[in-house]
Image 1 (cartoon, rainbow, N blue to C red):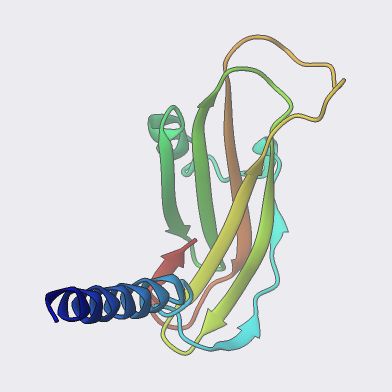
Image 2 (tube, rainbow, N blue to C red):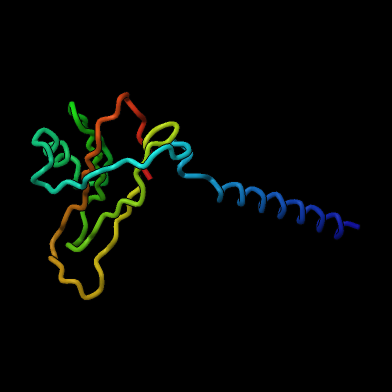
Length: 144
């Protein structure tokens, strides 16, 4: 009887853990921004096209990972940095950039150098600046 009771308890604990782990694994990382309303058009800026007021703000942060926005009268600049990398050859990919029901979602990834690619073997700083039209109102940003 005790063995059967222990087996029932063990089964109940296993079911509880399975339900808990399943619930944790289906968390929607877009939940903060909500459902997609529209994709935002953007331009990736070369360093020489970054506004001169913004560049010092980036230079203060780019050695570490960072996320920030900057707005002027016409544009919203979204800046994402991945900090110091051991060498060159890294690329930042924009996976998604959209306005959701609750804010704007920015989803980027850092892709490492490909095999056989020539690299500069000294520290490099991976960051990207996206420029999009200024938003009408202050809108929360969600980073992924």
